[in-house]
Image (spheres, rainbow, N blue to C red):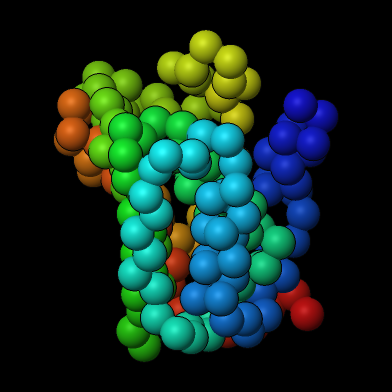
Length: 165
């Protein structure tokens, strides 16, 4: 809990150190790490990630972001989790989806609030930390799954020269 609160505060107060990194390798490695969690048993992980995708990011934060989203997807899914990473000259796009119950439309506006949770055992910090990481990268995040058909979190990170090095 202390670490999660520190990460939440760090997203607001510490500098986002963006340096060129292979985001594809980072996402693949993080997905494999998440696959080892108990919630991932009996579920299929579908990765659509290029062999390499270099972008200026804060490696620690992007790893944390991907791990939070993928773990949440495994916890919510019935049978599958999808991770898609793509990029062009202007934007990197990461999408994490599951085939679980999805996010009710009336809750969508609150899911990124600190301490808001629909889980019985959650602290409600994961998605607020993810949002803070996306904001620190001047990006955008939105959920556009379908209630009853699964959640889909989409992240857009704009091109940014390396900073904070």
